[in-house]
Image: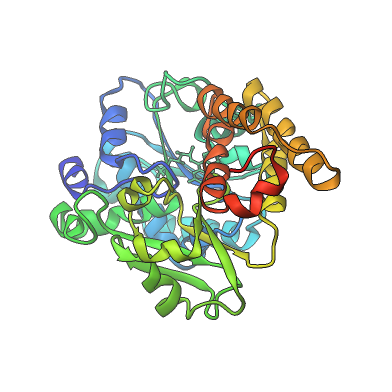
Length: 374
Ligand SMILES: Cc1cc2nc3c(=O)[nH]c(=O)nc-3n(C[C@H](O)[C@H](O)[C@H](O)COP(=O)(O)O)c2cc1C
Ligand code: SF4
């Protein structure tokens, strides 16, 4: 089964795109009398609701994903860590677990085998950082959701110090297809390095907002224009992949395809593939201020580049909008560089990406707030 999952090339859908086969193999090799599979259903990215769609419409596919991961690694406990703002999802998942129990597909000695698997549902507590895998584990343990230094990685030292696999809802929901049809069948969908399909969430600026499933490699313009039906009002940028994702100028959609490589090669990030539209009339400087404010609010506070840097970024942009103060370009670039290189996790480390995208593509609009032309 592990060989099939590895052959599928399935990569994590929660943001980083890490191959699940390698994670499962690492956990399987780790020696321990207790292992865990954790489903990250915190879905904190504003504008993302594809995990919610799966939890509420395909709960069995998600749960079976955890059971498969448990079978492959030798874990007998599955934890569903679900965003508490999704009470319907929690209800549906609890009911689906009860249905699996009645069908004899969870518990001890499943289908007469010596394989055991039990589920636990945990309601997350509403902080963005709870979606980061190590903070998430701390949160399940009842501790403050603070990011932990890696290594050790969760596959070796995870929940309660035991080997743990943490995967996104959409990643796990793909496993049943691979086990049923084989890794090759999955690898044939999408592109060579980004196999399978991707759920994309479109926001209310689209004529047809909603969740769409597309093969990896689908042109972004097809998603925007054909599936989404274009925009209801003029839009200048698409923030794709959550607040830590890239800020794509709308005309760039013709150069991008929905896969990890295309986005990375163009200095963007596919992430979880939510699309939040920035209206034409919305000032980019105010949008960037909001991104820093979001980071400052959601920072776990463990490392100073993020804890202090996000507040400084917000202050600089605020001051430039409310007085005749002009931001020193070098100071601002240094700030972004320090956050990018010095932050412990991808919250502080990731926020410079959309800011740099904005500076690269909206320099003319932003230049008035800086000492020198961008
Ligand atoms: C600040 C922050 C928030 C995150 N939020 C989520 C989230 O809500 N859901 C998620 O699946 N991954 C989230 N991640 C990514 C997880 O740390 C982790 O990479 C992911 O759950 C691994 O699953 P995958 O390999 O299936 O994508 C977040 C990461 C960071 C840095
Ligand atoms: S980057 Fe921010 S959220 Fe991440 S560990 Fe540092 S302070 Fe915490």
